[in-house]
Amino acid sequence: MKDSKELRSWLDGFDLDHPLVIAGPCSAETEEQVISIAHQLKNTDATVFRAGIWKPRTRPGNFEGVGAIGLEWLKKAKEETGMLTTTEVANPNHVELALKYDIDILWIGARTTVSPFIIQEIAEALRGTDKIVLVKNPVNPDLALWLGAVERFYEAGLHNLGVIHRGFSTYEKTQFRNNPEWQIPIDLQNSFPNLPLILDPSHIAGRRDIIYDLCQTALDLNYDGFMIETHQDPNNAWSDPKQQITPDNLRKITSRLQIRDSEGKGIEYKNQINTLRTQIDIEDNKILEILGKRMKVVDAIGILKKENNVAILQTKRWNKILKKMIKEGEENNLSEEFILRMYKAIHQESIIHQKKVINED
Ligand code: PEP
Ligand code: MN
Image 1 (cartoon, helix red, strand yellow):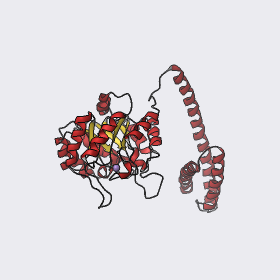
Image 2 (cartoon, protein in one colour):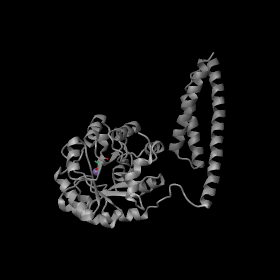
Image 3 (cartoon, rainbow, N blue to C red):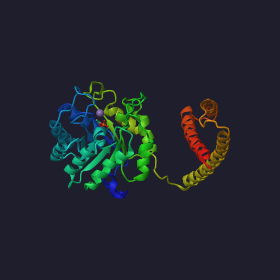
Image 4 (cartoon, helix red, strand yellow):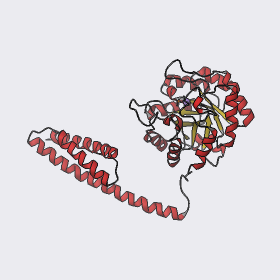
């Protein structure tokens, strides 16, 4: 798959003056619920209506979606409000029904993206259509698997594509339902700057109160839009009640967001940013120079250890360095987490260096 403007032509065609907003309930529950939410969304920035019809549930026994009947409700919502519609498809049968009911955009769920076999089957079922397909990230933090799924659609002739970042599973408990791992979508954006990138803050957060912050972070990283679960009575939703917001709340959230210009205009801005970037380049060079010097000392220690037959790894000494650096970091406004990550990387490189020194001659 080659990065080109073609990938985003469907989005550019919407000609929006704000990020794309896809909103609607986690699940279609009843006809009244679908139609009422769709009408309430007319007072917001949302132009695409979402609703899950077939719900992939982690454990059996939970609400698994209303099934094909919900497609009639989506069709009606589109006719009454003019919004486009989108739903999740997870097998060729879903695709066939979604095509029959003229669903405009299909999304691929996180649990489906992990399986190249299923992705290939869905891609084959869509071959010959010009559907817009949005691929959610796989549940595990694996960029190649995510991109691989997008490529399978591209190779099946589907060139109206996009990706949805909905966070990644971890066994560890964090403040998120699904860890954002921002570096993964950033890496993806660096390789495919034209592939539309949409944030799903609802499934990252798993709760309502951080949706705004997640959306602002995404805009600061040049995301193209959002998919936000929206329900007329979130607390009583049949699935994902904690993370859904009302259409009114959605309007409040999107109106507070600061939309950044991806390039920045104005000569004054350009001059200032160039000056600051030059300063950053100078500081970056200094960092590498200092690390190079530090590594020379590390090599000298390696030789000394070899001459005295001492083990490379000296845990006590290492823990002492870490403690001291965390404190110094604090004084320089650097978080403990950052210091730990940075020193871990430095330590690994130092061990590689010393091993090399010891094995030499
Ligand atoms: C959803 O969007 O409701 C959904 C099930 O999402 P995910 O595939 O990201 O879990
Ligand atoms: Mn959901």
